[in-house]
Image (cartoon, rainbow, N blue to C red; front, side, top):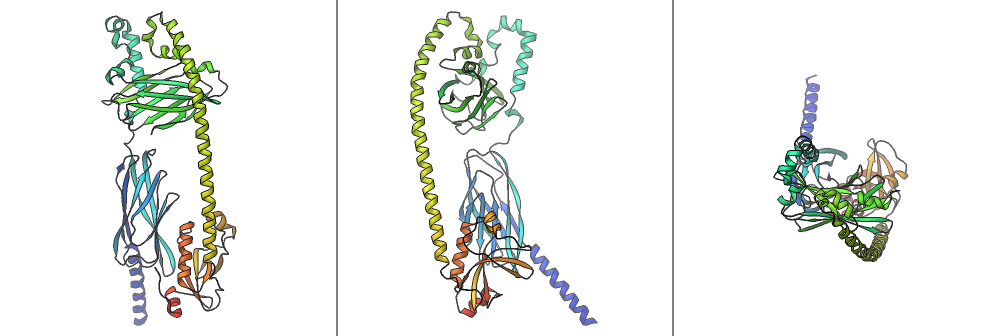
Length: 481
């Protein structure tokens, strides 16, 4: 009786020890709290693995617009594809604790709060286990605050002052009756203009800011008449949107250029071209934490719009004849620019077609190379039922899946996939190799070319599974990293 109690006690101690060993695994990611669009930063993973050894994999899922490159992988194979960073060890480093790093680059168009998570996978007694790496958040660009969208208050306050105090202010201080006159003076003579030119079945709307000291957050917005539609053109690092008849460009940090140009494509969906004169807009920015605005004035055949946006220009009735002369001259210039734009468009379209043809040719060549490598790797594929053989296990599960699963899920259809029942698992393998090195090379090809969950080499003796180490000893072969 005492002997049985002692055996039970030892079994409990062993189980508790195994649980403690598993729990001892900790992975701590380290990234900066905030970065700027277009910048780079180091991503660190501090791994305390305890007594875990052998095969392991780290996968970090990066947000859209993030790309990664290898820095220090501690002997792991590094790949980055489809927003996923993968670090794969056939044998983990001997140290209980080590740190891997890779460099992450942020696209200039990315902004806002992003979350980065990941997973660590490893084998324990030939069973796959996983550990969720703690997710981290990172702020790209300055956080959005309420001050970035205060135009509604700016417009409502002057309207109330105009109704209650307009007579006194108009007579005594005419220079302060218009809020829109203030930004031009405070920004050192900055001005914003708009040109509209035909471009095939659409119009190109180009907005130009003559910048004299404006920086930081800024926004350019055009309000289009009903029936018009705007699509993104040249953004100059701004974020473009078209919602509720508003074509909007937003910068978290305005480019440091004296002349800033942006554009969008304008479609008249059943609207007359005369309505182009009714486009209105403004350029707003922050100055000393206060919103300032500049009107966007149409140049060339848009004299009517320009006058409507700037009421101070309506004081002189003799401007009518001058406007007609300018309109005639602008029409001639517009026709000339129109011809140049069409010519430039044809050149760009041909360049785009040439680039696409080049990409198609490269893709075809890549596929041919992959096919050739596959055929070469399969030259050593005898039956796996006699003697010692090696295969590559690509995945395992508790339910059998149809053969089409691997083509649909992993885009893999290069060769036959073998199915076997082993220790309560349905395991899927490919190939059949008498040399471990050949199996290792095939595993590397599959890892690099497909998104299987950590392919690894498996070994057999007369059709029965054995460890790779046992197979190497029987065949007197050497381990190959």
